[in-house]
Length: 407
Image (tube, rainbow, N blue to C red; front, side, top):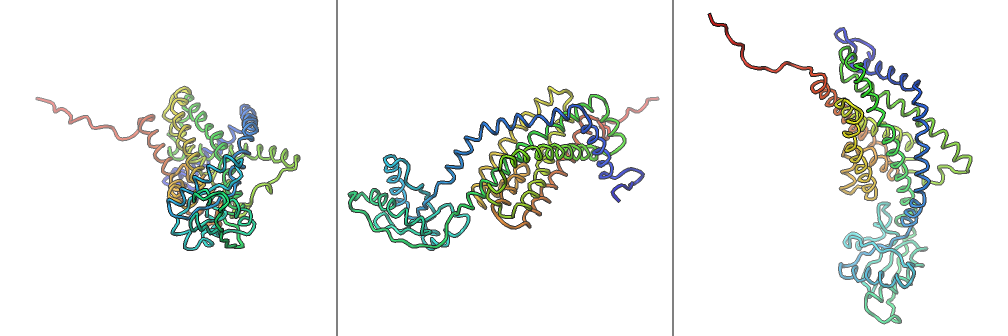
């Protein structure tokens, strides 16, 4: 039973829930919690100032891409020709992306229909005899620009344009849904990162205060240290959800009053209900992973200044983790994306992005179990470090044999 006793002592989970309830009520009814809820207003100002940069990124992401599946010399010549002509034509030529020739040349229509393709249309053949494969609305628009680029690459006079053979696929390669889902994934990652960084620091201050008041020693004497760590993590996570509910309700009301809604974002591959549910669960995992590290740091520090010094490298590392997961998001199933889903701290971000881009929920159940195992490991290591380094508990060291008394 959850609340049962084992050997005359509460189980770890039951003790953790008692600590969590105590800390949750203490934090929720403190006067500083109201000031804490007002903190994200500054974040909203920063986000509004950065909105111009976000629009620029979206404009660049929305540019259609023409995949080039030719031999290496021909592809390099076509890209070079495009760059020379584009300066004179005010960036009106399509963006070129060199693809793997064997795969794209064998069946460009199949590569194009793959939702992981990085091109809207594919050109094969050679600059002298280009073949354009893509949806009708694109190949009709790009036939002339491709002939111009191919003529420049082949070194022909401008009036001697090569004939561009056209294969209309009837489907849109690299569809707008792919780009839109990538934006949805990026938005989810950014919100989760900001919330995690904003809320995880509460664990540090709470533990330092209890160490200064000698409360932690009383708890450690009454219940297992693992339960103390777990209880504090669960309490701060519950407080975080209270803050998120308040902020979400306020911001949502403002957006709805202004006529904004989720319909402006592309629906994720798993659907909005599943995506939002996974977002909450992955936020909890990201919070527990980072909070367990912060909790260990707070247990080893004795002053607030020491906490700030020790936590700064972790905060900087978390920024690197976020950028790593964001970069990996653009290459689904590539080795870098697989690595981001396996590294514990970047796994919640990478898997949330995968939920926006790919259907299926089975892989997320596996990922959540994997992340929960890392949380348990970090809590166990942190509690043992606290017992050994701070509480000085454990078997006494052997200092040598006792001296025998002489007669």
